Amino acid sequence: MTTVGFAEIERKYDVNPATVLPLLHDLPGVTHVEEPIEHQLDAVYYDTEDFVLAARHLTLRRRTGGDDAGWHLKLPVSPDERRELRESLGDNPDRIPESLLNLVRVHLRGRQLVPVVHLQNRRILHRLVGENEAVLAEVCDDHVEAERFAPVPLTQTWREWEVELVHGSRDLLDAAQERLSSVGVEPSVNPSKLARALGDKVPEFVTVPAIRPTRKSSAGTVLMAYVQEQVRAIGVQDARVRENDSDGVHRMRVATRRLRSALSTYRDLLDRSVTGPIRGELRWLAGALGAARDAEVIRQRLAHRLAQEPAGLVVGALGERIDTHFADVIRVARRQTLETLDSERYFRLLDTLDAVLTTPPLLTRADKPASTVIPELIRADWKRLRAAVFLAQGTPSGALRDEALHEARKRAKQLRYAAETAAPLRRTRAARLVAAARQVQDTLGDHQDSVVARDVLLRLGMAAYLQGENAFSYGRLHAVEQGGAAAVETHFFRTWRDFPKASISK
Image (tube, rainbow, N blue to C red; front, side):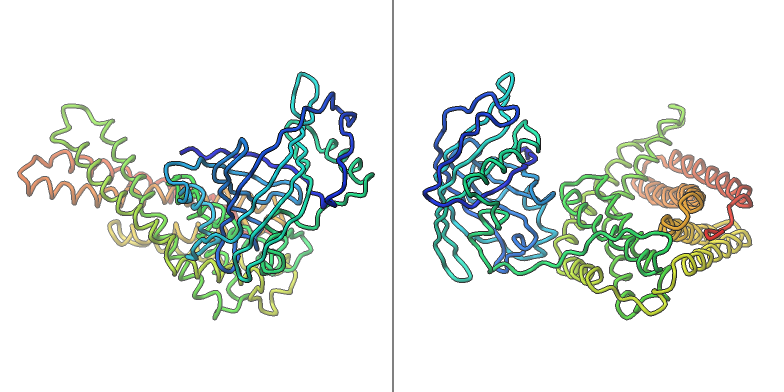
């Protein structure tokens, strides 16, 4: 099934049963109103027993009747706009489509969905039409009977009007609201029929406003703005990872690394009894997310190397063996990633991150000006990178130097993310340091990929040899990778002297 998305821009109004719908044919842009159409709609709404979705203003329902029968998931965008995703009922109308479930699992965190409300609606639909027969808006006169199942069963009836834009503008919404107010109709206090049916049974969900730091902000404010951005990125990418979107995997993994790095750089501003365990859990999550992607990167690297080899030097079924090896690795890694995202450990990490946003574990030092504190922290990360590079330079070529260069890469990554947090202070200088650190990260990343690729080639070559195959080409590719890595090392050490100073404040 293919999920179809729509922007739903509407306003709702509470209506007395005796109120007559006013004339709407002369609203701005409207040429005429079509003859009304009556629909009998039947919908079952799903949520957890503690109404996790409703608390976040999410609506999941199965509807029959009308011209949009199927499964609907509504996601909030603004007070009068929601994004609606639809799936057909399919062969089993009682089974919630996996594509919609994947979008809410980050909120469910292991909880089960159950029916919470059954809603029957006699809808009288009026379409407002403009030039070229374009439908500008739909005005729905709804007569609703709602049965709430839990926690206390309750049956309610009410009448409401909805004005939903189709091809019209928000000016039409404003004009319609003014017209409806002329007959004593006021906007509904309930954002949805589900909210009205549930009443006060929905728990309050504490949302943290977006933090927008400036040059005058405290160090804690700058840090929490960055933390908030990464936590939200993890939540957004969760569904994409579950759908096997490789870019979503990459973005979610980067968000976990950025967050872990920030908690490390700013550790002297934080209650480490809180953030220390979080850093460990973020390391675990990044590792679980990265296995499949890392395998795919090495597979593509070796495929590229193999394609560049002269045909006469390719002996044996290298391509098939490489593809088979990585297909198995990627399949297992993908399964493990999904198991991770459905694990209690992951759900508790999400709960902990929510708590960090609600109650930041900041120490008194975090109240100091960011312009004073952050440059010091960035310089400390810069010194760690410099020390790691000097250590690598003094290490003999071989496995120990490979490890030292990999450590330098991790230090460059931490400096890069630290510099990102300084953007509100000195955007241009921070961007320059970010770019330089990323160049080091990318260069040493290529070196590390060569280390991993050589290990794979060695193991595949040995396996081929033990099975009586000619392992010549594995050794040749290994030598190509080794030579390439040596060239990368030379280039890196030669260009390191041009790495910029870590000054952000001046």
